[in-house]
Length: 219
Image (cartoon, rainbow, N blue to C red; front, side):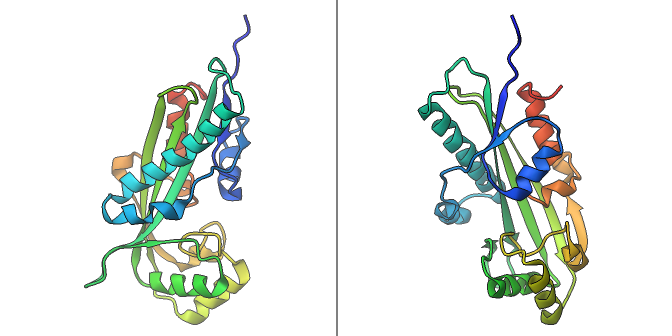
């Protein structure tokens, strides 16, 4: 009897996450999860960033898993759904509480958001979840990175945003392009056993590899 290779589904159509997962050299398909991320914003005040990132990652993976079940995926079919979500958090400053940043969507908002980060630290917290349809089996983990940005001015921020247009990126920058010039320091969470630059890009591959091995998708 031939052993069936488990099917892997990425619960995201983000080109960044697709390109990152392709690095692992394993076949997968990408599907958009039916999840309203902004509906979780109120939970930011009552949850830790790690808890919220994990909730969002699980919600995305579960949404795609449920859709596969509705489409007729049989219980005997070996399928795993990988979900991920990244939060960008600006720590408390004086009387201002911690703030949750979102994808800016426009050039103007991207410039304003980037200027909020200038000369300051912020945290990127990424939750990853692996869910099996028809089963309660799941694996999850969280990775955290702290970045300190240079004290750049609005002219530099505007020039960067207008040229590279990272309006679909939380924080309004990408370290894969000239956005790395805006960064002064990167600190990785040693408790997460990871010093992984892909965590900044939205899908921490060291964490993903550990979860895939737990599920038997990687040797």
